[in-house]
Length: 198
Image (tube, rainbow, N blue to C red; front, side, top):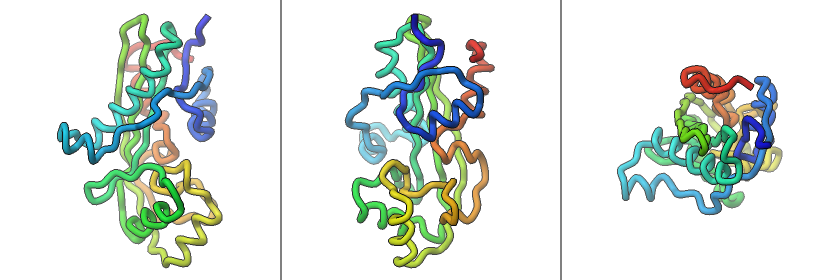
């Protein structure tokens, strides 16, 4: 028997957030090896950042739903958006440094797309949330120290809003969205479409 809800992610932050909000679920990896890049899709399809994160969340949910056709599969994707450019997870320390150099002293947007897919019921829902985040002004030394203390490789934009003595100066919107899963928005979608409560 398939579980009622599946999270198509192995992210510990997303798993913890769903548990915190009382979800009963199992977590599995999605099967998207090469995620499309925003810049490529913008050139090809003139896609908006909002639709980009929705599309990626849907792809992730659909990739896991193949094996759980009777379950409600949740997909999520988070990107940092600044000056028309999308920042995902850094590939290396130089990439992390350059991201934080770009964001230092500036305000940017954090977008998370969410999706709920149930193949047997022909359900494929998407939505997104947006949070504004300001990073304090950082010296090169402070950036290097930060990425040394807080490994950046599983973090969109190379930072974490939850870090103690972190670099986030202020934010407006959902804290959970910046962590990687806008749970309030997810609950809203479940309620609006009369999906089963967990």
